[in-house]
Image (tube, rainbow, N blue to C red; front, side):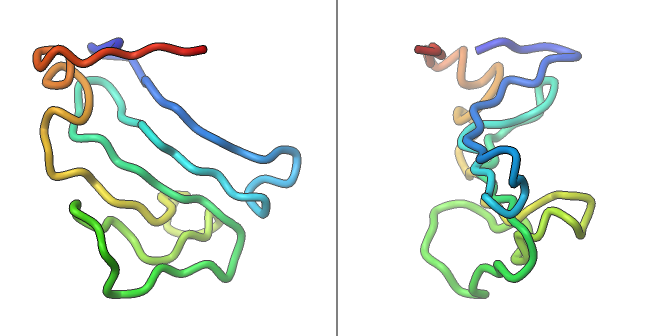
Length: 98
């Protein structure tokens, strides 16, 4: 995985040109060497995640609306430091695009 200052490795799925109403799913994303990975949803208004939900990470926001909270969306930050960036690479992780 690319790493270092100024890198922004990411895998997104987005429906254009309706964004954000069609939704955006950030499967893998981070900036510079900041880990761990954060999986995030960005939507139009009206999509709010429940306060209690099943996941193994740490919730970041509940409201997925891209028009509020600086477009942070609603996501889950992974608990494992090897889920992104330099730690991912040191653990032998790989990254490919098809």
